[in-house]
Amino acid sequence: MTEVLFYHLERGRLEDVLPGLLEKTLARGWKAVVRTSSAARVEKLDAELWTYRDESFLPHGAAGDGADQPVWLTAGDDIPNKAELLFLVDGAAAEAGALGGFTRCVTIFDGRDEDALGDARRFWKAVRDAGHDATYWKQSPEGRWEKQG
Image 1 (cartoon, rainbow, N blue to C red):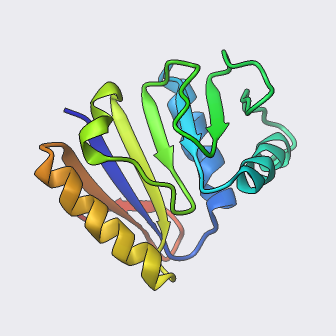
Image 2 (image 1 turned 180 degrees about the vertical axis):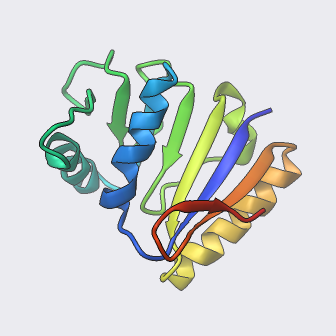
């Protein structure tokens, strides 16, 4: 059974919250795959992870880079780094029944986008129907993540 976390963005942007979540992932000694919706988005996230903070570094790779990096960015289903954690961002999808190879799956969706909300609701139902544990996290007015369900 995989733990699936739903992160509902209301105040921040993905580029603001993803690096912190990836830092926590690496601090646990886990590897991650970040699946996004397009190759162009992979390139943008790749650039963001190099420059998001002057005093920090997130080791990562994408198509054409070393596949053994602890964070792998992709627009496909590839998992060359044997990741324990799958991040689904920008509307990227996964089959709930195919999550069993991961310890955790984190889906981050924009709560200001009705289509993204609908997709998250459908994925929540599929995850629960597949027998996975699901939790819902929402940003507080201060921008912190608070468990809602």
